[in-house]
Structure formats: C-alpha cells, structure tokens
Image (cartoon, rainbow, N blue to C red; front, side):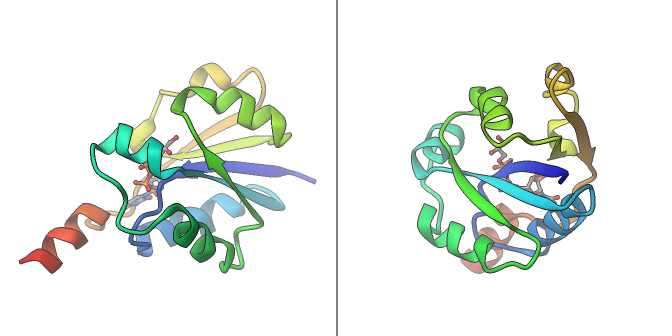
Length: 129
Ligand code: C2G
C-alpha cells in the first residue's frame, strides 16, 4: 500500500483545500492529513483558527479522499510524522516549494500548484466587508 501524507490548517474549508486533497490522494492508496493544532496556528498566524481543531478534523474525516487525520503540533516534526505514519509520499502546496526537499531521503516530496484566487483570508475579508 502506498501512503501519502500532507499537512495544513484547513480553516474555513474551501475548494482549494478540497482540490489539493483530491490531487494528493491520486499519488497512492491511503491519505493521512496532519492538521495544525489550534496552538500551532496561533504561533504560525498570530490568531486562532475560525474553526476549532476538532471541527476541522471532523470536516476532513467526512471526505471520501481522506483516510486518517492526526494533530500536527510543530512545523519542525515532519520527519517524525512521516516515519510514524510510514508515508511514502509527502505532498505540499507550492507555497512551500523547496522547503521540504531535505526529506527526500525517506519519501518522495511533491509540491502541487495552489488553486488560484481562493484563500481562507480572502473569504474572511469578503464576509467582513
Ligand atoms: N491550498 C491550495 N490552494 C489554495 C489554498 C490552499 O492548494 N487556494 C493548499 C495549501 O497549499 C496547503 C493546503 O491547501 O497545501 C492547506 O492550506 P492551509 O490550511 O493554508 O495550510 P497551511 O496553513 O499553509 O499549513 O506544516 C505545514 C502547515 O501545516 C501548512
């Protein structure tokens, strides 16, 4: 079985999120998603996510293309997460291009282009206006 791993916050779930998960799943048979904890998101973005960790996980688990989710507690633990999950392929959006090439000794590393013109921040701003 070929296992794929990917990571993200997946806050205010949108089409860009769905598309990257669908495209990721095509690289193998089983998709594991590391979901940023609320604490990690606060550290990374300076604000808590709109949807809590458990809400974000419930949405992801309801998707046909997602087989498993686990908490991502730190950006620096990718190697451990890949090893613990015996993942063969790491997929990331190309906003992370080059950042995880050092993990190529334990898995394939693939960067996929982001879906243009969609983001959680843009949605939040649109609602605010
Ligand atoms: N994404 C996309 N197209 C968009 C928006 C997002 O393809 N228009 C992808 C991102 O490239 C990422 C995934 O959807 O691969 C999740 O996006 P975010 O929730 O914004 O993830 P991020 O906060 O960047 O967290 O360890 C890495 C981090 O956890 C990634």
